[in-house]
Image (cartoon, rainbow, N blue to C red; front, side, top):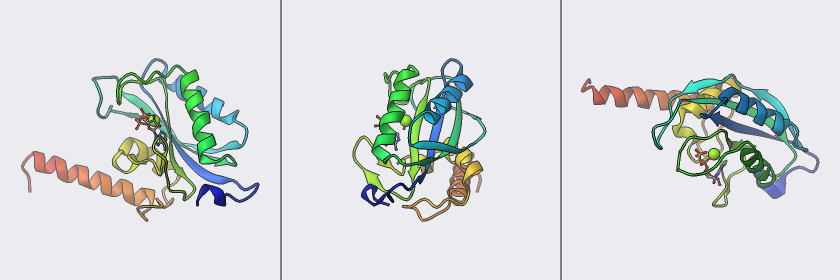
Length: 176
Ligand code: ADP
Ligand code: MG
């Protein structure tokens, strides 16, 4: 759905990714969730459990806690993004190194079936299909949600990613 097509007064289902690997990781995720609840125009529908994951890319750093959540939003994607960036800044996130450690990472994974490419804001999130730390918690709350560009459900995308990983690690071990 293009942003200008938002139904007046209507709410769009939005999926977020939340992650933290610095300090009180659970505390940061809980605090971010409660700050998001205080944003006017959004309402939590569900929040997955927390998943402990290895860091991907970037410098050596601690493990992450990741979660995914569903919101109903009457804000535009751009407005929601602005609010999430403010919350990241308030919780002390400093962008120093690409993929470096962070107190909190808040990503818009899906915004209804909108496809947005505006440089600093790309939705569906461009790296979500390669990240099991995104797809696993998302699959817990929305296995049947269809990715608007891939035309596949979250559970299919996760299954494909895990199969690719298994095949790659067999290749590395020289198995057939
Ligand atoms: P990542 O979340 O991929 O680990 P960062 O949190 O450091 O990386 O974000 C890098 C940039 O990604 C941000 O400056 C932001 O502008 C951009 N970005 C693009 N699309 C999105 C989106 N859908 N959700 C969150 N950030 C996004
Ligand atoms: Mg991010």
